[in-house]
Amino acid sequence: MKPLDVVVIGGGMVGLSAALMAARQGLQVALVEAHLPKPWRQESPDLRVVALALDNQTLIESFGLWPEVLARRAYPYGAMTVFDA
Image (cartoon, rainbow, N blue to C red; front, top):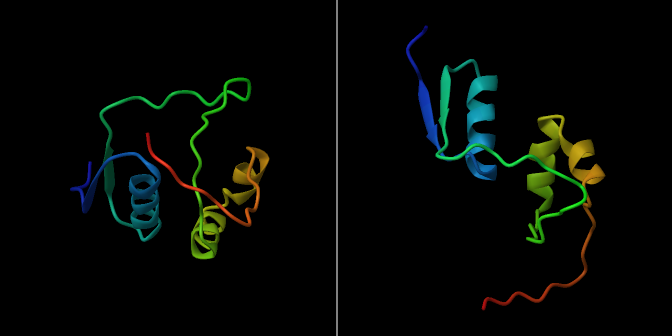
């Protein structure tokens, strides 16, 4: 095994994106995540909302994943109210 160039801690959206971008640059990457991902199931959707700016969309498109995002309940929004219990 080649020595690692990058170790990314955390497999959320930012960590996965950073790991993928580094790997696409030819770097040897390790991704460290504490938990296995839960399988995505259409019948029990996650009710959290993620707002993506246009540059985020462009990044996801560069990964070839934008059609997958659209297929999983992606919708444009005109307004948003944010609250925290």
